[in-house]
Structures are given as structure tokens and as C-alpha cells.
Length: 241
Image (cartoon, rainbow, N blue to C red):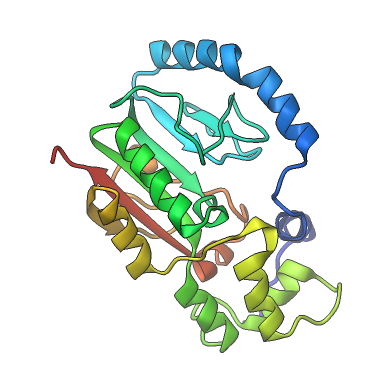
């Protein structure tokens, strides 16, 4: 397709892919000691007291969003293990955002997680999920992806570290970087509905009908086509039923 990325963007993109997202025990323990337990309770209380619109980002890594309570197992404003009951009261948040996180949970844990998200959202609160899209990955495998040619994507992600065959590329998306389950639109829709969400809507990268949920995606910042080439984005609302 003839498009080239600046070298700094290439390097940062490769880092995202090549580094394994699973945390070592020391980082998890340190983050828990500094931002968990009593400290977490204080941070949450202060945030909710001062936030006109309560917004929670889950699985933030080192991507902090201004105006949001950023939570993760290794970094963020607070320590949060999303496989467990979350330390918030029912009907606490107006918005929840998860970028490239839910694929790190099993399908069963993903459902439990979404049920918890619904619990802590206010009525008519909205969750926005960004996650790899199985259908787009299949199209990448067959080199039918409308956003990018497969070889160009491989060059951006892996650089000159060796030839990556389509089979390896596909399996990396499925199993590398701590990935446990990759969704397509149909399955994540059914999972959200099973968790009790309604008013589901597919979204484009960085676009939303809600001002608080627009321009949030930071995965592959600076590369306009890479996130759309491999990602699905969906929003869902907590109804009163």
C-alpha cells in the first residue's frame, strides 16, 4: 500500500507486540503494596468525591487517561485484579473503558468480568470495549484485510527480526502476549447480552456518539490504520431491567 511509518512509531509498536503483557510477580506485588488495599480505598474515595463524571478504565497498563480512574494489576491509579470482585459499590460509574484487555481473560472469566462491570455501572451507564477482532485476523491471514496488506503489517509489527509466516502471525494473535480468548462481533455481542447489557453499538476507532468515549484508543498511537485493521470496538448500556 506504500505507506511508511516514522521510525519512532515503528519502535513503539514493536515494543507493544514483542513485550509479553503478563506481569512478573515483583511488579504485581509492588503495585499492590503502593496502590492496593487501604491506599486503594483512599484513592477511590478521593476520585469519586471530585469527579463530576465517574469513569473507570480497566486494564490500563501504563496508558493513563485524564479524568479517569485508571486501574490495572501492574500499574495505574489503583491496583485491580479484574478476575475478582471489584472493590466498588453497585451503580458507581457512568462509564467503563477497556482497551485490549478482555482478550487476556478466558471466555468464562470474561463473562464474569462483564457481569461485574454491569454491577458497578449506573443505570444507563456505558461500557466501551476495544479488543482484537477474530474476523479481521482471519482476513489478515488470507491477506484480504481492507486496511492493510499482510506483509506491511508484519513489517510494522516485527520489523526485520525474521520472516513471519501467515500461520505464525495468526497464532501469535491468538496465544501470544497473554491472550486467552479472541472474540468476533457475534460472540462478544452475545456475551454482553448474557451479562445483562443492552443497546449494543459497534464503533469505529476513536469515534463514539458520547463525548466521554470518543478519542480514547491509544493502542498503536500514531498509526492510523493498525488498530482498525485488527480491532473491534463495541459499546453497551446498562438498562434498568
